[in-house]
Length: 120
Image (cartoon, rainbow, N blue to C red; front, side):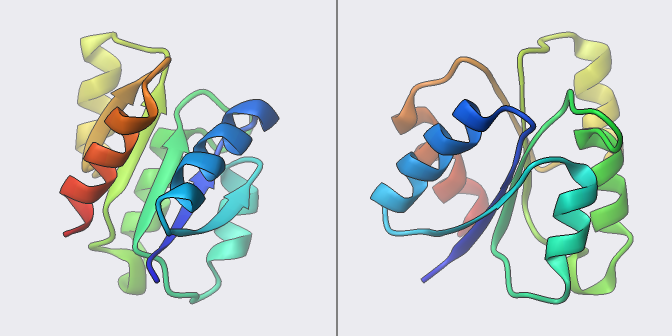
C-alpha cells in the first residue's frame, strides 16, 4: 500500500483529501502544517506529499524546500494544493522542487489522476 502525507491547516480540506485517497486504497498521514509535517516525516516511508501552500509558520513552498534537502525524501513527488493561480507562486513552487500543482477547488478524480501520474 502506498502512503501519502497530506499537509493542510484546513481540517475540512485534510478530511476531504484523506477520504478521496483512502477510498482509492492509499494510506494517509495527516499533518496540520509544515512543522507538523516535518515532525511526522521522521524516516517513515512515504510515496507522495500533498501540501497546501498558504499555511501559518512553514508554508508549502518552504516545506517543499526542506523536504528536498533531506536525503531520504529528495526524490519523493510533492504536489502543492492551492487557491493561488498566480504564475509567480507557481514559479516559486517549481524552484523549490514541487512536482505538480493542483488549484483548489478540485474534483476528486482530478486529484487521483495527478497522484497516480506523479507517483508511478
